[in-house]
Amino acid sequence: MLNPGSAVYVRKLKPNGQLHYQWDGRVLRCDDEGIVLRAEFNVDLVERDFATFRRGDVFHEFYYWDRAYNVFEVSTSEGALKGWYLNLGLPAQLADTGELSYVDLALDIWANPDGTFVVLDTFELAIVHSANANPD
Image (cartoon, rainbow, N blue to C red):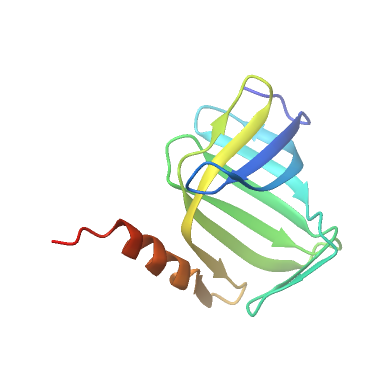
């Protein structure tokens, strides 16, 4: 387990194991259930239909060792809550080197502070499902 304040290198992997994104975070908590990190968004600007992300936005990232999802609470650098991003994926794994990795599967959910939400990546999920479908 890692101590609070420890640096963590996060690797988000595609289902085939290839690297999709990577970033650095700091441990807020690490125990038998999982790990909670604080990270800052490291891209200047990403605009999506459901939210806009800017360099410096703060992500509190909740990963679990035995659950097939992780959750990111996203706020502006000033502390205003933007919402929560849920990644469906394989349980997170922590290497002895302090590297955290998880396989992101083809479906995510964005939840707004007002309780509304958007199911994301349904097109990608349909492609993955079609590719894995049994022709019977």
